[in-house]
Image 1: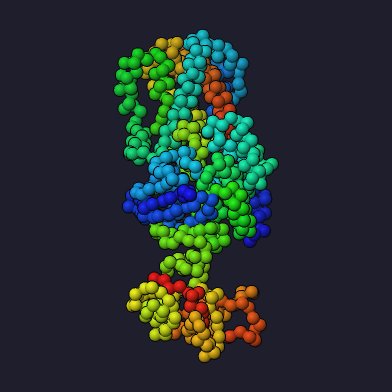
Image 2: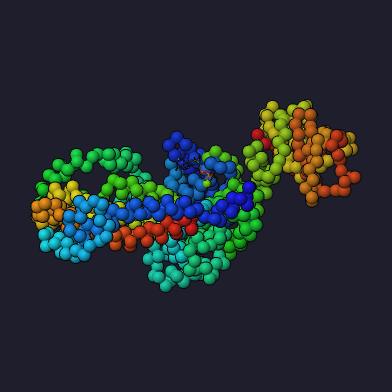
Length: 354
Length: 282
Ligand SMILES: Nc1ncnc2c1ncn2[C@@H]1O[C@H](COP(=O)(O)OP(=O)(O)OP(=O)(O)O)[C@@H](O)[C@H]1O
Ligand SMILES: [Mg+2]
């Protein structure tokens, strides 16, 4: 099967600024693909190159096997939902949605009928005559979606489509977008800088930073096996415990303590152990048995944060403080500040990153 | 603190504000009123002390004299043709150029724009001689084209429309149109123009007023009565009357100003409407 989008060695420069730095990326047909990264990392630029609104300085970009080169946006089987919706303010919802069809010289009646279908699809039936300024943010978002979908793109590009919505509406739209994508079976390429959104919605995620592609993988791979320190830290909460590789199964932490951590880095490499707060367990000091595949460090409880369903402990090691998250338990049964504890975890639950 | 502030807003402007506004309104309206007083009397009222404040009954007679002394109907028509064609063309071409300067990337864009702005600083008088030579080469002396063609675009118009498009049309809107397959001109027509209607109306109005009131350039290129515009014709009224007849002069001025008022009423409404719409949207 040919990939929907195939980006090879693509670099984009604006003068001296390298917005996108030599990335390789393949997006499958029918995939919900998220691009995640901090502000300015090149997400929008990558999306715009797929859209045909910008062209790569170097490299090749194929859509369904065809090199697109400098093909204009409307000649690609792609459409875009812009971050601020970019609805035409002086046109009705219907005119906004049918604009693309009218540009393709589709006759007025057919264009209107297809636009109506598309408007129904995003559940805005009855709003055809309204102007964008007579709609709520969520409704405008739907119009933008309908306007893109009416052109029947095989790849839909969405640049932070939910960025301007409040949390509740955002979660609602996340679900709808996801089911819409499943029903239509087209690829969605979704830009966001909200890692939770990326994790919940996507089949695969690409994490970018400073124009570079750091890791591509399923949400689980990205979360469980971060490729490096940046990804580990950017996706979810984590403790980065500094150390040095001793051999293929052990690393030595800053204070000299040894923990089991399999890695294929050469001995002597400075690394960090990424340990998710919810993967660590607290036991009274000395009570931990050297069970198979588990390892631990000693520390002192420095503080407890009550989250209702969970408790987050700050555990002071000799040289740093880490977080441990556990299910809530009755007040008498909790470790309290000052208690000496062992923090233990299954070795395969932590990742060694550089 | 809060309630006090609220009550102040609720009360609205005080009596002093109204009195001041009324005073300003009367002061600005008075010259026009007195113009009518003179125009409806004998020219001698201009010298009366204290000045006469009631209109007379000679207005129509004075107007008739104007039309008898010069082909004033023709002049009104000429002015209307020149001012409306130039205003339309100027608005259209300025908007087109403004669109290019605002939304299209091309080499030398900024340099070109600075050059256009710089031409606004060249005094009109400097350009008159070469422009006259050009017009006479083209054989357009005593031809309305001599007024219309130089009025089809203006540096100020280009600047004004570029600012308007910068402010009213986000880049994403242009890109959304492109994604939907609209070409450069189609985008201009369907997306840009509807978004800048109020600002375009203002420019059209300014251009119309400027062309209607222009005196210096028409005086240079027009010397046959049939080609006269209103402002040039009004000067002729005066010269033929031997001693300046202010009553006739004022009567002509009033007739020559009425079309301007009408245009202002039509466009003024659109402009205010546009501004209101923008305010509601924002
Ligand atoms: N037209 C341009 N001219 C010059 N530099 C640009 C241009 N567009 C983007 N850049 C630069 O390229 C880099 C990447 O920008 P991009 O818009 O792709 O970031 P992003 O990941 O979408 O960020 P955000 O999350 O803030 O939208 C930034 O440093 C930006 O300043
Ligand atoms: Mg962006």
